[in-house]
Image (cartoon, rainbow, N blue to C red):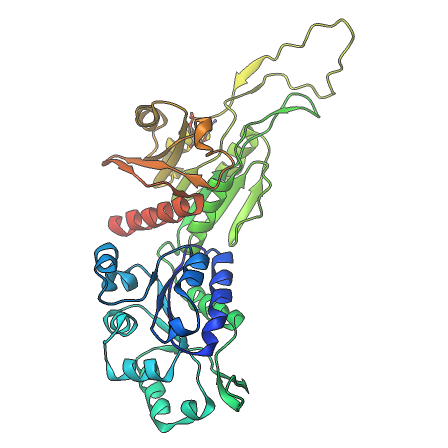
Length: 402
Ligand code: C5P
């Protein structure tokens, strides 16, 4: 579900009260949800609760000038990977079958070319009515996927078919749907570096930095979500392994380089790790003891291998697309352009890590993407947002090259 965008159409029915929980679960799995709420739906769940949970605007009105200006009913479906209608009322399904487009939900459904998953909810007699059954048959013939309804007690006091599938079943239907999609990076292999490195001084002490690994891990997850076989080479972090990635854990820069080289060949390399530039030249194999009266020991430092630069000249094993990061505290763009030249990589993602931005260890990032074609300034967004957008750009790059 990571990075997937669900347009959720909520129509009128008591089952709409299960939708906030459904949104929460989709988002927990890394998906994004944008809601369209019908007038009937608004009687059971408020735009405010859906907006709070989806962290997005909720769309209700076909004829809203501001909504049309900002998003537009066509873009609502264009921006989504899938449309889910939950609950789908008998009325909404009848309108869909007939091709009516009198409100925002039905207009989106008539205008879309995206896959649609439909979760009906209604009274048992309405469900069993020949009109509803004919509409369901028509919609199924058009390729609409159905989840539920199920049998059980109804809010109206009756028992039978017509209960909407539970939030867990709705999420499972989405997961099954996405698992069956090949993904634009299927058949490709990416190596992603993430986190800090630890450079030993002696067996108990090391040199490290403040990298959390959040950005690199999110990139690995976003690439895997697009069907890419992804090897994540990570320094020590507190983070869980991202879903669907092969994770190789290392400590030092030299181990990171060895693990990256072992993972080649790859089509894509993304070096998001904050690799220590230097290490102690002569790391002690026993703990350095403090003796009263001794001078502080001097650390003799040597340069670490540069993984990004090494990958960028890796001969016939050079990944087709090598992406580096430039974490800068000043002159962000100038330094990043110079870094792209110096390292020989294809793209640089430049970000401002001056302490006042809170980027290190924080959840947000403001980046600029520097390619041979120029510089793109991306708006401030979450690190997962940056990861999803970067993964999409990588997929587009390979699509364009084919
Ligand atoms: O030179 P600087 O550390 O600023 O460059 C940052 C970029 O280079 C990042 O993509 C980082 O992952 C990569 N890098 C590397 N190996 C190093 C140092 C940096 O891969 N030893």
